[in-house]
Image 1 (tube, helix red, strand yellow):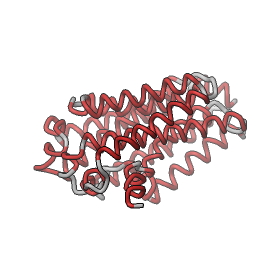
Image 2 (cartoon, rainbow, N blue to C red):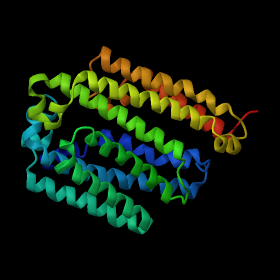
Image 3 (cartoon, helix red, strand yellow):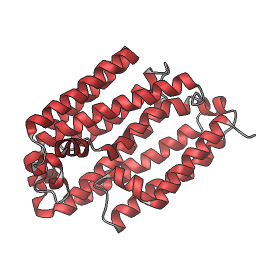
Length: 294
């Protein structure tokens, strides 16, 4: 039973919120109410959850020694010794293989995307996480693959603007996470993550602000783009822009005022104003896309 609990903790179920990006193509294509597409997208979400959990376990195995220098990560089952590396490796393989096999039966193209996701993060774990800037870009590409996964199961092409917004948002969250690690660990930062020796807090703040600014600008351009106006029949998607602006500003406030940011999933699930803002953004977006008013 202790092993089962340790495996479940290592799967980082709270981080599954990141896989919700799989639903974005379905929502913004206007096909959310089509039962078949909704079921296929939900299955793709579940398969990404299995694959991402397998990747998290693989990452924890590779970071076992370095996680011991982190006040939070040292409590993870693999870093603390509660879950052995051999057992963890088996469960990681089972999760990833299961995801690949099931995704192939759902849509062969989806299995290719999930395989690309796993390979990308394997390279990240054992190589790219040591490369300054590129380490965050690789993480952001993982979100792009989630978008593509949501697209292939419903046979649509993603909006270029949507891809840019997701990529920049992921960069923003990634640089904020590096900033948190740099401040939290201070002198032990490089012991936990070698690449932190190349980062300065001021530089990370700049990268985060640039990414956040571009994300807001590109989302604004998407909301008033011709393709959206034609599909919705109105330019009122622009009314969703303030929710995006507030959400990013609120996240920055939480990071600076509460010295958080190490776990984006935790902030997105526990900060009440942010939860309300995201809920309102989703609600208003769906209302405008599916029940537009002139």
